[in-house]
Image 1: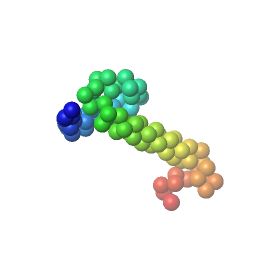
Image 2 (image 1 turned 135 degrees about the vertical axis):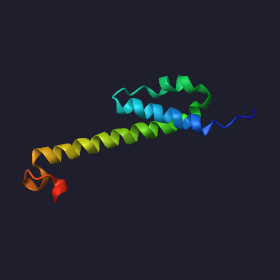
Image 3 (image 1 turned 180 degrees about the vertical axis):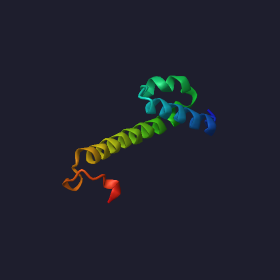
Image 4 (image 1 turned 30 degrees about the vertical axis):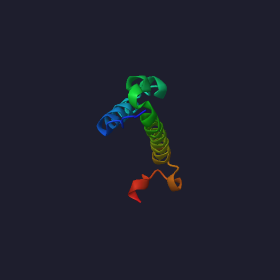
Length: 84
């Protein structure tokens, strides 16, 4: 059976749409999201998992930066670490 390669533009659009949803706080279930892209689900699944992981890591970093900046933990002062 000859399988057609998924259109790269559709893949990019699907990932972009998924990331947009993550960014507004609506993290769709990956498998449910893939139902809309069944013809390219195998190619899209690892991209979405990676996007979700990167988004989660970025949120953790932003949260940690906020804690450091606003709690005065940075060098034991109230100074913004970006000013050093």
